[in-house]
Image 1 (cartoon, one colour):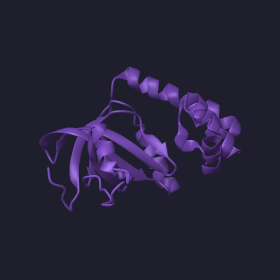
Image 2: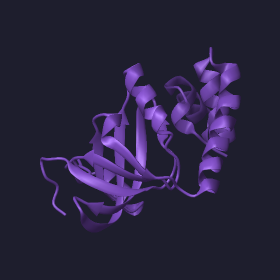
Image 3: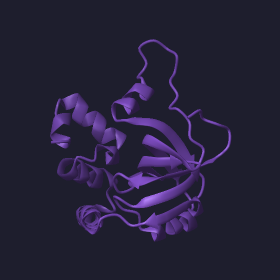
Length: 178
């Protein structure tokens, strides 16, 4: 499947609940078809939601594991820098079975075709409740919030750069993600 300059209709199942990273969210999709042609493989799609209206549109979709989606997105192969010794992002994703990436331009380009297995949805909701309960007491202190989410749930992407550097310098970084 060669990447084109135009968007494709990608149909697939959501492998896990949307993974928020700052203002962006990752959707890992087990692809079933691209423009009506059968396809097997995985794609990591990203959507950046810096507008509150777009965030509410996205949240209204109520996406969870196993949901079957149709998304209008331009697929591309992950790019690499051609410098020797630089982190090989393409190979990193391929080891996870992800061969395509794409950026979703608007939540309106996502259509939920059918919902996943009810147990997956409840598991996703339970995890969201746990994350909210753990992080809400520390909503005023981003460093502590990130540290608690890292130590309890292994979410190291919520750590601030200062906290991460301090744990690395002291040799205790492994304590954050245990």
